[in-house]
Amino acid sequence: LVPFARFGGEIVADSGAVRAFIRSTHEEYRRRFPWAAGTVMPASMDDETSLCWPAWTPGLLEDFRAVKGYDLRPLLPALWRDAGRITPKVRADYYGYIADRFARTFFGTINAWAKANGMKTHAQPLLEESLAWHVRFYGDYFRVLREVDIPGADVIVMPGQRCHASVVKGAASVAHLAGRNEVMVENFAGFGWGLTLEEQRWQANWLYSLGTTSLNPHAFSISRHRVMTSA
Image (cartoon, rainbow, N blue to C red; front, top):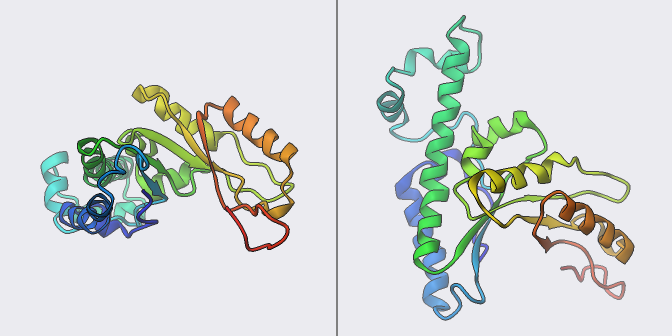
């Protein structure tokens, strides 16, 4: 079950919008294929849903004050500029807040739906290669991925390139800390029909050594007869 790619920050942090999204996608899959949930469709897969920056949603200021105990409005410039000694606190509180709200509102809501329908949830983040991007797109990478049953990553490299081990180890670390026993990685993407069995074995072995438990082969050609024939 792969119903979407990426949304804006306003959508994924709004509970009403997320419920409407589930009704128009997940519920439709269940309605049309009621026999498949938990069997043919064992999990709901999320591909790179992330926050816009700055992440904002209706009611954020009021909810932030209730959670953190102070008004963010006069301190908003501190998200961009140095506002003195209070700057680190404002930024840490803001990113911690949006990460928790994103995790609960989006992934938590979908996870609850999946469990009620005998399914699991899997997610792979956007641009997980950099710690700075973790903050930019998720607020707190570990907090967000803890909401899914199967943390994941994508290893998209071209021939001759290498992907940093932290991409996979991040997802494996989330699984380890959250008590999960599965890590799925999207792989082989970008190689085209020139990808050999030896290269496939090399990458698969490398991914398994980093903590991957299952692979999601993606976007590589499987035929020289027609280059556009791809997995």
